[in-house]
Length: 564
Image 1 (cartoon, one colour):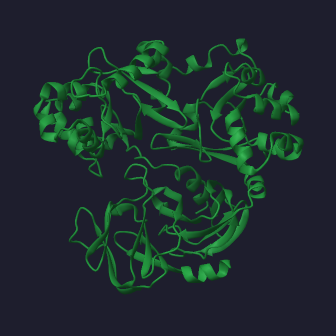
Image 2 (tube, rainbow, N blue to C red):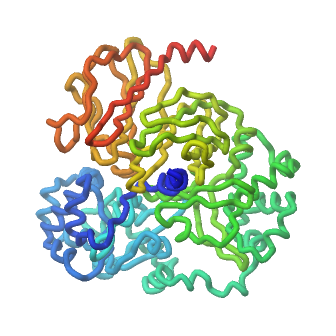
């Protein structure tokens, strides 16, 4: 239990599929066919029809960009084709599939260092891009990364890539343009691969590079003039010119403008408040040199900043790269004494965010980790709840909107790590601890609920899937499907395991069944009244051996009265 908070902070960021131990891995073809959630059945059928299955079972290593079934369905609809028509045209099908295969083993950290890579389709390349915090290949989002196989790696994508000039691609010119741009701007495939695999290339010759302030000032587009003015006003220029090394998270002028507007401040007002300004700037500085590959290892990391006692959390989820929920644009601008990463917003330390954004929100916690034992809950370093036991869902507490640091520890102990989440004004957020401590897979989720007014005669049901081993589930009322295919958080792309439905107020038999075995009941509650104008938070929790339906009721009429 002593390690609970640290594990939560590190593993709450993982929403992709964790790599198995090497001895338990299968080859690429079998890994696709045996995907836990069955996301690649169309791709597997296409590989079989094109006679490429054996290629992906051999010893040669490949990187597969794997469209999901939903991606194929959308592409076929756009192209006016059926799956049968595509599978029957084996020449076209083979070209399309080879365009999704890259010779060699390129895990995600290496792809982010490459502009273009050659595919198994002769003469064709794919263009990779990380901008605005979204990672794409030929402008198609990469949603899950690093599904490891014995002979390569799989990255799930949410679209089908069409080779330039492919007859079926009615908009092929756009794809061709993306590939050409990547090829013209990069140094060629060989150079890109070397950059991806050789850490020394990124280091270069530091002695010839400028220090961080000069590198920011030399930006050809002049994007950091506000940041530089702030650094000078706070008296931090000398610090950033020192030996370091430092990692700077650099907001652009546009990011500062948006922050000023949101906070109701002018640049002059912030620059004049040097104490607040200094704390904000130090919150953007991390002691040490951390490249993109370091920040995205294992799905993300939490690092100490130069502001005493404050951390920032990096998250790589479904192709989106963020820090404290703010997109990281261009990474790895290297200076003599450190490195900076461009970010799309201004990071506010929790205390300053609360002071500058006094709008209120509502927060509660739910302990849904069945084997974690009692825990203390800390919010922004302060003890909020003591000895919270499994199945407890607290009352909502009014809080200021902003960034919150949530720490969890054994009773009487200090939290060893935190998870950071943003709580928006007027929102209702449940912070849920889930996962199995014994498996080292504890996570924290910020769940955004809906407490808007209900129509007459209606009740609201919010279902959260918190049984790690239960797979995809269906939820029924009186035997009728209410919610279908609800996945455990992170198992179906970027889902959070939450679904919200309004229903007619009445008494219901509530049942939860595995999607793969609809005749089997996982958990149920008979004769449960769903009353008018009430919101019911239903947590499907525990384990498959001892499942529970934990239901917490909130009367919206009482909430409205309290607000008056």
